Length: 115
Image (cartoon, rainbow, N blue to C red; front, side, top):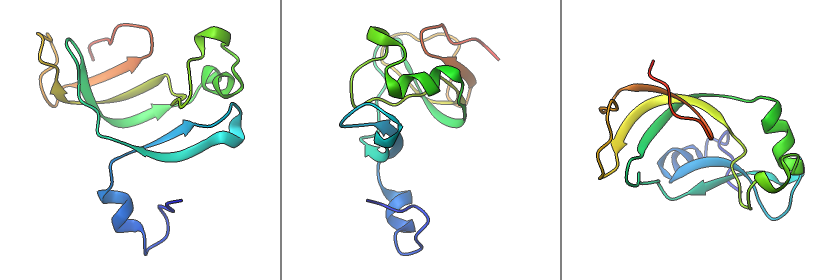
């Protein structure tokens, strides 16, 4: 496992792919692990955000224990629903109001509001 605080591994940590905390292998907080994923690419009508902040809320406490039932999702799963960042890339279909470096806030399942 990669330890992002170990000075010997710091270069590996900051030069590797996207870092995520994800629930993997089985449900429960003990299965919430630091992992890497390939850098995402936005699809049609989507934008890619560079996350600047994220908030954890009650929903994020329920998700690891499947507290959302069938709406929880499948593993591996990133249990985060709210965040804010800046647009760094737009998908190849028309995306309006989201030029690169535009600030955005997002929440899963709801449209992204303008700030």
